[in-house]
Image (cartoon, rainbow, N blue to C red; front, side):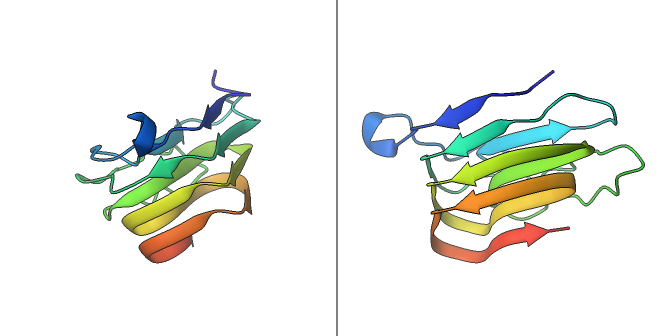
Length: 123
């Protein structure tokens, strides 16, 4: 189970920046229905180029799986209905800033985008 977690305050200036990963810099995958994954938050991070090799995601039915084959900062994909807060992040140097796949209810606020082709992609 992954629920009520917070990924926060990762900044390159403190040696904790998030960049250069094969999948999105912050990734939440809920592959099968019936998981308890609600209440996660992605807050106040500095996240650069990630998802350098692509992410097949792999959601089980009834969700439709849409692989993410572009560079991506934050990815949330779930075959279970979940809610996630994504706020206050500095997102840069990716094709997709935020990629949402499956049964995800995302709340956004105060994210900053620089050199990002598509700020938020819903599939």
